Image (cartoon, rainbow, N blue to C red; front, side, top):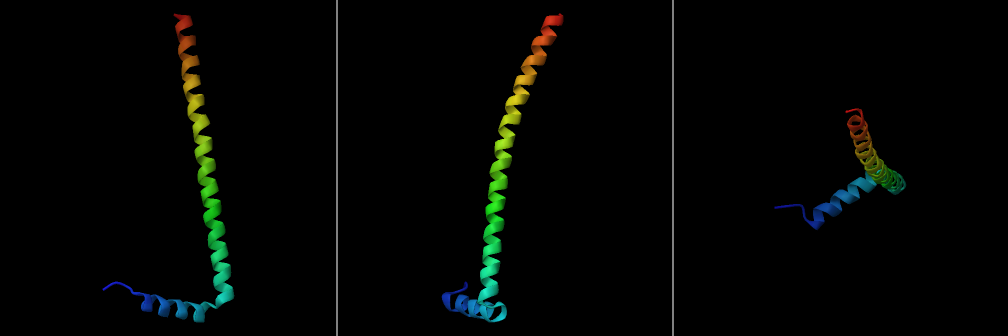
Length: 71
């Protein structure tokens, strides 16, 4: 009782008639560009998060050693 191939083809024809092939090509390109920029932003965010964790660990070690020197 799901959507079959015939129903998908009818939907595709209606979408092409309503939007036209040129506009669908533009929409597809824009969607692809948006996904590409989203993926690069996620990778960049992950790369930025890793050095921040390393800096926190180093800072904690330095603060601890300075505290021990005062005692």
